[in-house]
Image (tube, helix red, strand yellow):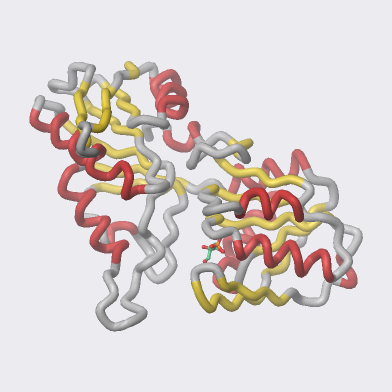
Length: 288
Ligand code: R5P
């Protein structure tokens, strides 16, 4: 069965890299808006009998979700043998619990919607907090890849005497793995989140570590408050400006500029196209 990579708009670079490494064809999807704002989708490549990999990172998912579903359903109708989703960033995974009566558990609903239109999903570091496995919410085959080794290697190659700093106690195991591979010590912050943009951070005693360069690591930067508040606390503790390394660079509002002003450098993987991208994840998404 031949494989065809179809990028949704904005995903062409990573789709091209994947097609190239798999020796597969890179196809195209035409999308536009009708004058009333509704989505128009047309597959420009033949899909019949083929394994179709639709590439669509899901940052700002609401803007693109219907077009993505229309593309997948059209591929099925036109005879694709399988239609998979390669979503380097998988949205909506953080609301995984009804914190207040009546709230939508959006991670579960989103997973159900994707499971209806795709046969398989490949993603990187989905934010699974209270779930152990995507199989708990998806009914299709899922494959999860991890960017931690790429982050660790970047730190090893680019930062002298690093001190890896994780965002909270829950991240300890992940942070320890990154630090271990980078050959660096690590600490984690004590984080209290009171709202979407209301985060406070406490750091452990840093007196024995002041000569090191703090490297803040996180799987996701969303409002940016976690990294911004941590950078402020490090500065108050007399540390040099930190380096920040994240997997998924969402950076809402002006958070990127604010974080940059407090840091030596801010880098991310290219799961979400962003000015801070410095680490390619394409190799992780190649066919198994
Ligand atoms: C929390 O569990 C995550 O690891 C991140 O620290 C968090 O999602 C970052 O969010 P924000 O950028 O909005 O502080």
